[in-house]
Amino acid sequence: MIQKGTINFEDLGLMDFREAWDYQASLFNERVSRKLLNREVGEGQQSWLDNRLIFVEHPHVFTLGKSGNQNNLLINRDFLENIQATYYHIDRGGDITYHGPGQIVGYPIFDLEHFGLHIKQYVHHLEEAIILTVRNFGITCDRLQGATGVWIDPGTPRARKICAIGVKASRHITMHGFAFNVNTDLSYFNHINPCGFLDKGVTSLAQELGSSQDMGKVKTILKDNLISLFRG
Image 1 (spheres, helix red, strand yellow):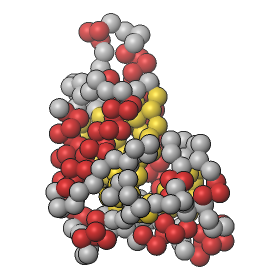
Image 2 (image 1 turned 180 degrees about the horizontal axis):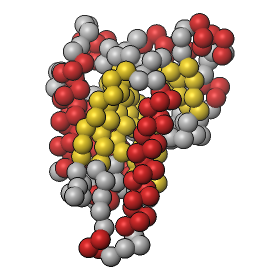
Image 3 (image 1 turned 90 degrees about the vertical axis):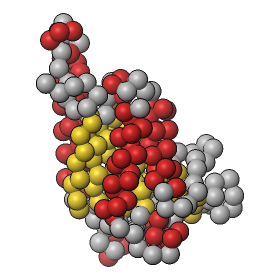
Image 4 (image 1 turned 135 degrees about the vertical axis):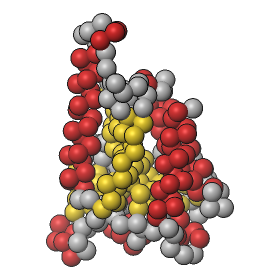
Protein backbone atom coordinates (compact mmCIF):
# COMPACT_ATOMS: atom_id res chain seq x y z
CA MET A 1 0.00 0.00 0.00
CA ILE A 2 1.30 3.47 -0.90
CA GLN A 3 1.85 5.72 2.09
CA LYS A 4 -0.10 8.97 2.05
CA GLY A 5 2.18 11.80 0.91
CA THR A 6 4.59 9.61 -1.08
CA ILE A 7 6.41 11.51 -3.87
CA ASN A 8 7.75 9.60 -6.86
CA PHE A 9 9.91 11.22 -9.53
CA GLU A 10 9.72 10.62 -13.27
CA ASP A 11 11.90 12.16 -16.02
CA LEU A 12 10.17 11.85 -19.40
CA GLY A 13 13.10 13.26 -21.37
CA LEU A 14 12.16 15.06 -24.60
CA MET A 15 8.44 14.59 -25.29
CA ASP A 16 5.87 16.27 -27.50
CA PHE A 17 3.74 18.72 -25.53
CA ARG A 18 0.42 17.12 -26.47
CA GLU A 19 1.64 13.67 -25.45
CA ALA A 20 2.91 14.95 -22.10
CA TRP A 21 -0.31 16.93 -21.53
CA ASP A 22 -2.40 13.81 -22.13
CA TYR A 23 -0.16 11.79 -19.81
CA GLN A 24 -0.31 14.23 -16.90
CA ALA A 25 -4.07 14.64 -17.44
CA SER A 26 -4.51 10.88 -17.09
CA LEU A 27 -2.56 10.91 -13.81
CA PHE A 28 -4.53 13.93 -12.60
CA ASN A 29 -7.92 12.39 -13.42
CA GLU A 30 -6.96 9.09 -11.82
CA ARG A 31 -6.07 10.85 -8.57
CA VAL A 32 -9.23 12.96 -8.55
CA SER A 33 -11.29 9.80 -9.03
CA ARG A 34 -9.46 7.98 -6.25
CA LYS A 35 -10.00 10.93 -3.90
CA LEU A 36 -13.72 10.95 -4.60
CA LEU A 37 -13.87 7.20 -3.98
CA ASN A 38 -12.06 7.60 -0.66
CA ARG A 39 -14.80 9.96 0.50
CA GLU A 40 -17.41 7.24 -0.02
CA VAL A 41 -15.72 4.55 2.07
CA GLY A 42 -14.63 4.22 5.68
CA GLU A 43 -11.27 5.58 6.78
CA GLY A 44 -9.84 2.07 7.10
CA GLN A 45 -10.73 1.30 3.49
CA GLN A 46 -9.13 4.39 1.93
CA SER A 47 -6.10 4.10 -0.32
CA TRP A 48 -3.87 6.62 -2.04
CA LEU A 49 -1.98 7.00 -5.25
CA ASP A 50 1.48 8.54 -5.17
CA ASN A 51 2.20 12.22 -5.71
CA ARG A 52 4.07 12.31 -9.01
CA LEU A 53 6.83 14.82 -9.79
CA ILE A 54 7.42 14.89 -13.55
CA PHE A 55 10.29 16.57 -15.40
CA VAL A 56 10.19 16.87 -19.19
CA GLU A 57 11.63 18.88 -22.07
CA HIS A 58 9.42 19.81 -25.01
CA PRO A 59 10.10 20.57 -28.65
CA HIS A 60 9.40 24.23 -29.44
CA VAL A 61 5.87 25.11 -28.31
CA PHE A 62 3.92 28.15 -27.14
CA THR A 63 1.11 27.64 -24.62
CA LEU A 64 -1.59 30.10 -23.61
CA GLY A 65 -3.38 29.86 -20.26
CA LYS A 66 -7.17 29.63 -20.09
CA SER A 67 -7.62 33.36 -19.37
CA GLY A 68 -4.64 34.55 -21.44
CA ASN A 69 -4.75 37.04 -24.30
CA GLN A 70 -4.18 35.43 -27.68
CA ASN A 71 -2.75 38.73 -28.93
CA ASN A 72 0.33 38.01 -26.81
CA LEU A 73 1.31 35.51 -29.50
CA LEU A 74 2.99 37.87 -31.96
CA ILE A 75 3.24 35.52 -34.94
CA ASN A 76 0.79 33.70 -37.21
CA ARG A 77 0.35 30.00 -37.86
CA ASP A 78 2.52 30.05 -40.98
CA PHE A 79 5.43 31.53 -39.08
CA LEU A 80 4.96 28.92 -36.36
CA GLU A 81 5.65 26.27 -38.97
CA ASN A 82 8.72 28.17 -40.21
CA ILE A 83 10.29 28.08 -36.74
CA GLN A 84 9.18 24.47 -36.15
CA ALA A 85 6.92 25.41 -33.24
CA THR A 86 3.40 24.48 -32.19
CA TYR A 87 0.76 26.37 -30.21
CA TYR A 88 -1.84 25.24 -27.66
CA HIS A 89 -4.54 27.06 -25.67
CA ILE A 90 -4.63 25.06 -22.45
CA ASP A 91 -6.37 24.82 -19.07
CA ARG A 92 -3.77 26.24 -16.69
CA GLY A 93 -3.60 29.69 -15.13
CA GLY A 94 -1.35 32.42 -16.45
CA ASP A 95 -0.90 33.91 -19.89
CA ILE A 96 1.42 32.84 -22.71
CA THR A 97 4.81 31.18 -22.38
CA TYR A 98 7.31 29.19 -24.40
CA HIS A 99 8.67 25.68 -23.85
CA GLY A 100 11.62 24.21 -25.66
CA PRO A 101 14.78 22.13 -25.45
CA GLY A 102 17.13 23.11 -22.66
CA GLN A 103 14.24 24.05 -20.36
CA ILE A 104 13.14 21.97 -17.36
CA VAL A 105 9.36 21.79 -17.40
CA GLY A 106 7.98 20.45 -14.12
CA TYR A 107 4.55 18.89 -13.76
CA PRO A 108 3.81 18.04 -10.11
CA ILE A 109 0.67 15.93 -9.86
CA PHE A 110 0.26 16.49 -6.12
CA ASP A 111 -2.61 16.21 -3.65
CA LEU A 112 -2.06 19.38 -1.63
CA GLU A 113 -4.08 18.01 1.28
CA HIS A 114 -1.29 15.43 1.79
CA PHE A 115 1.05 18.32 2.54
CA GLY A 116 -1.36 20.65 4.36
CA LEU A 117 -1.04 23.31 1.66
CA HIS A 118 -3.36 25.73 -0.12
CA ILE A 119 -2.76 26.72 -3.74
CA LYS A 120 -0.90 29.95 -2.88
CA GLN A 121 1.39 28.07 -0.52
CA TYR A 122 1.95 25.47 -3.24
CA VAL A 123 3.04 28.11 -5.77
CA HIS A 124 5.29 29.62 -3.10
CA HIS A 125 6.96 26.21 -2.65
CA LEU A 126 7.56 25.90 -6.39
CA GLU A 127 9.10 29.36 -6.49
CA GLU A 128 11.24 28.64 -3.44
CA ALA A 129 12.63 25.44 -4.99
CA ILE A 130 13.72 27.40 -8.07
CA ILE A 131 15.21 30.19 -5.93
CA LEU A 132 17.25 27.68 -3.95
CA THR A 133 18.39 25.91 -7.12
CA VAL A 134 19.50 29.10 -8.84
CA ARG A 135 21.24 30.21 -5.65
CA ASN A 136 23.27 26.98 -5.79
CA PHE A 137 24.90 28.43 -8.92
CA GLY A 138 25.79 31.70 -7.19
CA ILE A 139 22.91 33.75 -8.62
CA THR A 140 20.48 35.76 -6.50
CA CYS A 141 16.85 35.73 -7.59
CA ASP A 142 13.49 36.33 -5.95
CA ARG A 143 9.77 36.80 -6.46
CA LEU A 144 8.29 39.87 -8.12
CA GLN A 145 5.39 41.52 -6.31
CA GLY A 146 2.15 41.06 -8.20
CA ALA A 147 3.50 38.31 -10.45
CA THR A 148 4.20 34.59 -10.22
CA GLY A 149 7.47 32.94 -11.13
CA VAL A 150 11.09 33.62 -10.27
CA TRP A 151 12.95 36.73 -11.34
CA ILE A 152 16.47 38.11 -11.40
CA ASP A 153 16.75 41.79 -10.41
CA PRO A 154 13.02 42.01 -9.58
CA GLY A 155 11.70 45.49 -9.00
CA THR A 156 14.30 47.07 -11.30
CA PRO A 157 14.21 48.05 -14.99
CA ARG A 158 16.41 44.97 -15.62
CA ALA A 159 13.89 42.50 -14.17
CA ARG A 160 14.01 39.24 -16.12
CA LYS A 161 12.19 35.99 -15.54
CA ILE A 162 14.12 32.74 -15.25
CA CYS A 163 11.14 30.54 -14.35
CA ALA A 164 7.46 30.81 -15.30
CA ILE A 165 4.68 29.18 -13.28
CA GLY A 166 1.14 28.30 -14.36
CA VAL A 167 -0.93 25.68 -12.55
CA LYS A 168 -4.33 24.05 -12.42
CA ALA A 169 -5.93 22.48 -9.35
CA SER A 170 -9.15 20.60 -8.70
CA ARG A 171 -10.09 19.07 -5.35
CA HIS A 172 -6.61 20.15 -4.20
CA ILE A 173 -4.91 18.03 -6.86
CA THR A 174 -2.52 19.89 -9.15
CA MET A 175 -1.30 19.67 -12.72
CA HIS A 176 0.79 21.79 -15.08
CA GLY A 177 3.52 23.59 -13.11
CA PHE A 178 6.70 25.48 -13.98
CA ALA A 179 9.17 26.12 -16.81
CA PHE A 180 12.76 26.77 -15.71
CA ASN A 181 15.13 28.17 -18.33
CA VAL A 182 18.48 26.40 -18.14
CA ASN A 183 19.98 26.22 -21.65
CA THR A 184 16.88 27.56 -23.38
CA ASP A 185 17.04 29.30 -26.79
CA LEU A 186 15.72 32.65 -25.58
CA SER A 187 15.16 33.97 -29.10
CA TYR A 188 11.80 32.16 -29.14
CA PHE A 189 10.53 34.54 -26.47
CA ASN A 190 10.80 37.33 -29.05
CA HIS A 191 7.66 35.92 -30.66
CA ILE A 192 5.45 36.47 -27.58
CA ASN A 193 4.78 38.91 -24.77
CA PRO A 194 6.04 36.49 -22.09
CA CYS A 195 3.35 35.91 -19.46
CA GLY A 196 1.59 38.98 -20.88
CA PHE A 197 4.36 41.40 -19.85
CA LEU A 198 5.40 44.07 -22.34
CA ASP A 199 8.23 45.61 -20.33
CA LYS A 200 10.14 42.70 -18.77
CA GLY A 201 12.68 40.29 -20.13
CA VAL A 202 13.52 36.61 -19.82
CA THR A 203 16.78 34.89 -19.03
CA SER A 204 18.27 31.47 -18.43
CA LEU A 205 20.88 29.89 -16.19
CA ALA A 206 23.24 29.65 -19.17
CA GLN A 207 22.65 33.30 -20.05
CA GLU A 208 23.44 34.46 -16.53
CA LEU A 209 26.52 32.24 -16.15
CA GLY A 210 27.87 32.71 -19.66
CA SER A 211 28.02 29.03 -20.57
CA SER A 212 25.83 25.98 -21.16
CA GLN A 213 24.98 24.05 -18.01
CA ASP A 214 24.79 20.32 -17.21
CA MET A 215 21.05 19.57 -17.38
CA GLY A 216 21.45 16.39 -15.34
CA LYS A 217 23.12 18.28 -12.51
CA VAL A 218 20.49 21.03 -12.51
CA LYS A 219 17.65 18.48 -12.54
CA THR A 220 19.12 16.63 -9.55
CA ILE A 221 19.49 19.80 -7.49
CA LEU A 222 15.99 21.00 -8.38
CA LYS A 223 14.38 17.61 -7.73
CA ASP A 224 16.04 17.38 -4.30
CA ASN A 225 14.94 20.93 -3.41
CA LEU A 226 11.33 20.26 -4.43
CA ILE A 227 11.05 16.99 -2.54
CA SER A 228 12.70 18.47 0.55
CA LEU A 229 10.34 21.45 0.61
CA PHE A 230 7.18 19.40 0.19
CA ARG A 231 8.19 16.73 2.66
CA GLY A 232 9.00 19.47 5.18
